[in-house]
Amino acid sequence: MPNVHIKIINKSANPLPAYATSGSSGMDLRADLPEPFTLGSLERAFVPTGLFIELPEGYEAQVRPRSGLAIKQGLTCLNTPGTIDADYRGEIKIILINLSKEPQVINPGDRVAQMVIQQVEQVTLVEVAEIGTTERGAGGFGHTGHQ
Ligand SMILES: O=c1ccn([C@H]2C[C@H](O)[C@@H](COP(=O)(O)OP(=O)(O)OP(=O)(O)O)O2)c(=O)[nH]1
Ligand SMILES: [Mg+2]
Image (tube, rainbow, N blue to C red):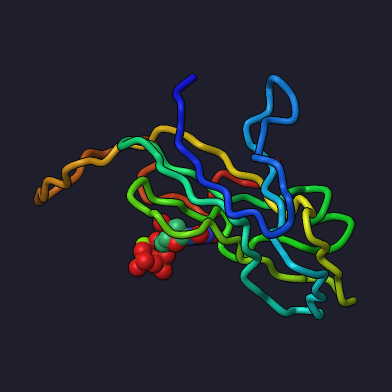
């Protein structure tokens, strides 16, 4: 398991993110807020985490929604999966949107998203006149049917 440097600016006394179980893909991210705030129906907002991360080259972090919040409160990440680049040194922020019909309250320390850290490769694009053929070809967007 590689080490990753993380700095936490702790407005809400939040603990460092951690994997909830030994098999968890993501670590939950807590809202670093001075007080509760309300996200109205269809409103979006930055939710600060107070976290600054130094990812090794060749890694990325993804900010993803939590399914429980999505089904119970209609809260999700607008740009899911959010991309944290390896060279980003600013605060990790969550772009939360309330897709429910009711206002939703976010409390300091609430676990509003999760962060998955994984390896990612950069490639060199080589321009060619023709690309290779496949069985699928240009078929997509449901062309294999529903069942
Ligand atoms: O949910 C997110 C998504 C992004 N970021 C930060 C880290 C990321 O490295 C940077 C840029 O994100 P992205 O590439 O998605 O945004 P952009 O609109 O392309 O901005 P830029 O031109 O700065 O790359 O913003 C977050 O804190 N949370
Ligand atoms: Mg970008």
